[in-house]
Length: 159
Picture (spheres, rainbow, N blue to C red):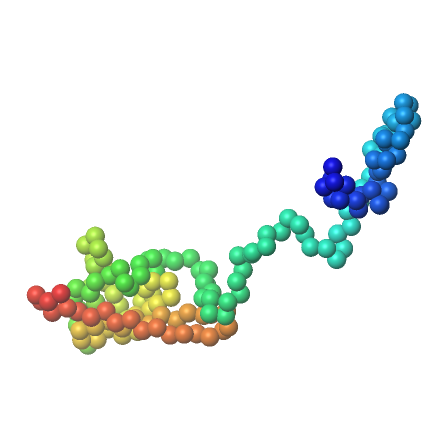
């Protein structure tokens, strides 16, 4: 009872209803007092108050190092990350190099210079013995860190 009185004290003080009035009234007066207490409406004033139903921790971290996704749909070789491929061959046709790579299932892909690969990468250069891939990301701070990945052709018999 003491806990109820302490928690409900602001309601009693505001005049919404008073338990003492209901208890003190007898017979017909008791019913009238209960009806009067029920008929009075309570209005919540939300100005200068926090929303009690909002979570304490939100998903937005606003970290400056967080990478922003471009949101463009991924197609073709953009669906495959460079780390999922193994370089198995290089072709030279008229001074222009082409690379042959395969994934873990053995499916082969032909790579050309300038081709987009992975979420953020493109093939910068195909040269003798390697393929250079450049990945550019954009962080919340506006910086554009650059990562270079080299796929190296392994010699026959070497792993």
